[in-house]
Image (cartoon, rainbow, N blue to C red; front, side, top):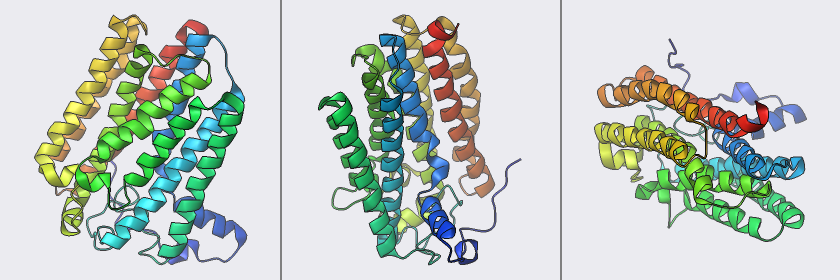
Length: 325
């Protein structure tokens, strides 16, 4: 059974050596890399749909799309840490579950200054822009719109005065930025048309990634509320969050059923999503019944991450099954 590490964040000792390698290590772990599968897997799934639809694979476009989404995700994470340090929600969060909630802790642990984190976040987002330019030169202007919307959502998620996360709109923002957009964009890069079937294919993964954010917000309810950061979990409380979490998981299952009904994916696609419902039930029950139990909330977060990873990989396999088998 997974248990909470009583060490509530990184320490200077972990990153104290002054070598170039350790400087790179600081910058890398400041981006919260444990969450990168939530952005990488949708691109892979979208590319699989595109290969299924067009019968061709562009490895360079796929590699650039993966680089762009990782840079965007990393930049958004770092900028979010800076914003949450300023508003106090991370600084005074004593119920965090590191490394999942309460930010990277790099500012609070004085591993990197707030200014250095801000500059790093901006640099990562600029890297995403430059990668988008490369995709534009390779594939044309249409792909730029995917990038623009993704970057705007990534910035608006954290930065005032919009600050979507504080308006209870964070889940919708990540569902679009790390679900619908990367999947449809990656599929288009392989030659697929943006269609109803493709949007329906993006829906389960978008719902699973929204559930990740909601599960991560629950342990931070007290700190976010005190800082005036009115996330969806703050607005709903743990019981309401468990209900909405269950709705996101049900939406994912319904979308998979829809894909089978319209004959976009084979009937056996339903098998794994049905099995994932059990993990979803366990995670929702822990959020609802044990909102003060950090070990239970840790388990719910890790189950939710597994649901997203297993579900995304399974949909990728199912999309490629006519080619693979």
